[in-house]
Length: 172
Image (cartoon, rainbow, N blue to C red; front, side):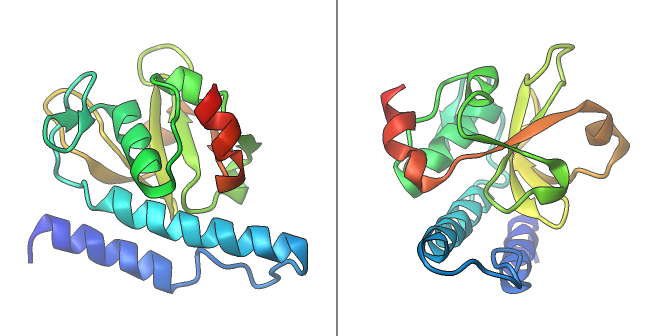
């Protein structure tokens, strides 16, 4: 079994454990938004996992040439949801709404201070304390555990970018 198959299996396990659903799902109009977000998040996460193993390239925005962290996020959101996000992780950190660490849901964006400045790195939260990202020169897109000391010390915050934000996000 190869690494990509293992990661894809992890993604399927996260999806099937109900990480995309709440035991107390909202009703009425909120339920419609909740269902839409859950479906979009599932598609987004599965799409992001399909790039595990693609090499890192500074400024990269495609699977053919490689990704940097924000290039991966931009590509996944554009291809999965049709959303045009800003180019840098710092600018992306200003889009959507703030999410507390204990309220993270699959599809949320997680930000880290990896270059001695806030919001210098971004990844896509998968659920169960894991996120997918394009790490650095010499690396490949991979899944990490946010509970690792390295990531815990550098966590800057998280944002949720709902499909309802698409018109606002794309026009910025």
